[in-house]
Length: 77
Image (tube, rainbow, N blue to C red):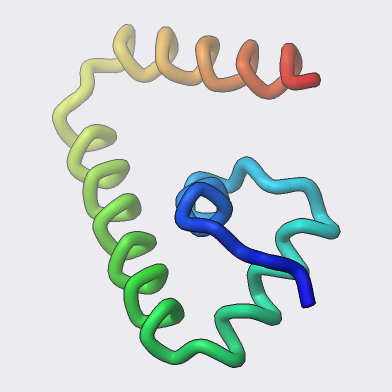
């Protein structure tokens, strides 16, 4: 069985895992209810923060944030 670290779990929440590692984390979460609860809580917090940022940002700020996000995704190894 593949070892799943806290770094893997955080990368899962942040959407930064490759598909195979994501599957391994999901398998881990199915088998570990406590880890699953924590990841769901982290996902909720992340979504709440994203939503609050979206509401509080001006249109110009949203454009800059979108450009940075797209640039980061394009430049991933």
